[in-house]
Image 1 (cartoon, rainbow, N blue to C red):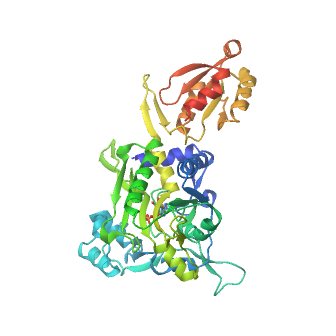
Image 2 (cartoon, helix red, strand yellow; image 1 turned 45 degrees about the vertical axis):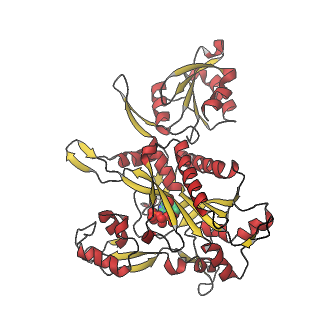
Image 3 (spheres, protein in one colour; image 1 turned 180 degrees about the horizontal axis):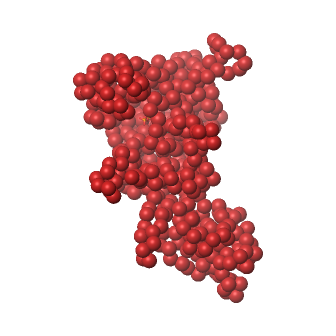
Amino acid sequence: METVMDKIVALCKRRGFIFPGSEIYGGLANTWDYGPYGVLLKNNIKLAWWKAFVQERDDMVGLDAAILMNPKTWEASGHVASFSDPLMDCKKCKERVRGDKLIEEKFGVEAVAGKSLKEIGEIIEKNKIPCPKCKACDFTEARSFNLMFKTHQGVVEGEGSDVYLRPETAQGIFVNFKNVVDTCRVRVPFGIAQIGKAFRNEITPGNFTFRTREFEQMEIEFFIKPGTEKEWFEKWCIESMNWFVNLGISKDKLRFREHQKDELSHYSTMTKDIEFKFPFGKAQKKDKFDVENLETWGELEGIAYRGCFDLSQHAKFSGQKLEYRDPQTNEVYVPHVIEPSFGADRTVLAFLINAYNEEILENNESRIVMKFHPRIAPIKVAIFPLSNKLSEPARKIYNDLKKYFMCEYDESGSIGKRYRRHDEIGTPYCVTIDFETEADQSVTVRDRDSMQQDRVPLAQLPDWLLQNLQ
Ligand code: ATP
């Protein structure tokens, strides 16, 4: 039985959004490659994020820091000592599991918050939580497994050359705080935004691109005056949520989840996650024809108040002063930080799921249509000549439009087939050049969602599209 997720994964492969990684070699577990439409979608999402949070604000600058950083960074940030998950092995089938996740799935996240390795082992044993693979209840003791990928740089292996692939982009921002303050005209409150890859050696990756070992983050460190954290934290929660909603994610598929006291990281006193309803539940056969698509809430973004933890730690470990002098009052202080941290791949996945629609048409035919917000749709306009005989004027229109929009020219197959293909890619507008076009200097523009067709004069076409693609 096919679940909604099975259908979305299949569409992603069939239509060139997301392919299994290194597939011709049999793949590499839980790696995924973005295909021609996937990369366009992801880039559009990253651009929309950058536009909303950097371009359209006066209090944000951008950064692109290196993935490899001085290893002291990760001592200062606490990642060497405590960025780990409780790893357990099933003694029967050797499956590796995350002890905290086993408890979380059964009793909710509150049941595991703040629990030690020993307590995690005890809860699993006492409640006879079974191995997800073989259903036995016999695990090794829980032990701490550091999630950072270690590698070495240079030609000599050994001491001094060990480096980590960054497990988050945030620390690249903190170590550049002084550079940004010294060189750009920023004044607290201000933020630094960055988009980039992060790596975590996850024990249980899975659910398509939801949890992978290599992923991309879109992070902001927003520096504020101590005492203003409540106000800024609230503002960032609202602005983050609005960003998802403004790009078309239904409100009923989004929620805030506030971290309870014992669930908070050591450096944070306020954290909220924005979660999306993912259709990850296992297919359950109610009867032969019915599949229940259980939904689970999954984190898209974490918004955390981190106090002055990071800047203070880096000041301590580097011996550099990481402070701010208020130019008006001359007051010197270590700024506090609100961190909105978005996962780019999870966001792409949420937009794919949100866009997926199956529709029955009037003639009883069905269609699959990806209803992306026009701003993130991979292809904005498809250009079709009604017949091969019209390819010359059609190509001319295509060559004009592609200067402004990501376009695709398509002349093969029936118009109906071409519409279906672009419905599945999520192209908002299809422009057809027909035998009237030359005489009336107009084309037919078909709307993806309503399937309504409008006659638009050629001279107005770029403006018409520009207006409707906002
Ligand atoms: P989770 O609890 O799901 O492991 P996290 O709380 O560890 O996530 P953060 O450290 O807050 O995640 O990272 C910020 C964002 O980065 C997350 O909201 C998520 O969107 C994304 N992210 C984190 N880990 C992964 C991963 N393994 N694969 C894909 N995206 C990830």
